[in-house]
Length: 121
Image (tube, rainbow, N blue to C red; front, side, top):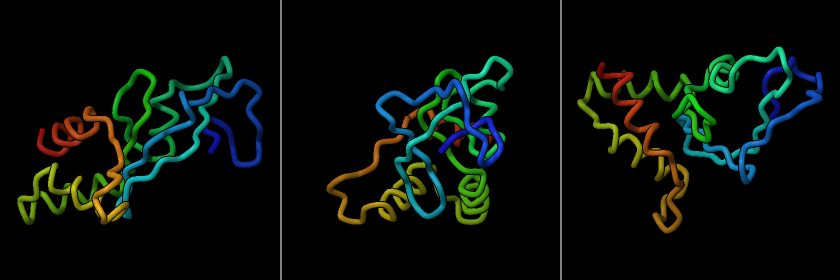
């Protein structure tokens, strides 16, 4: 996936994520995707490129994990209505990705703490 340019337009200075592993937390599970940021001189910051596609980065400096705005909204509603904790929500998403529990997806702990701060203030 290429960020920073319209669909079909190629970036001449792509910036790959280290080891080509970028983790996306979505309401249907936790996914590892190949992602390339735009490295052109006139481009936005890496975090802003993610925000433009409605992904909330776990960190502002060289993000490697992001949560979609959809999953943030789901967590917000569930935490308000059912008092669901962030770790319980993560556990449920992890089970959607791999219900055996043998190979749980690895997510940046900053994302979980940022989710909690973002939702709960």
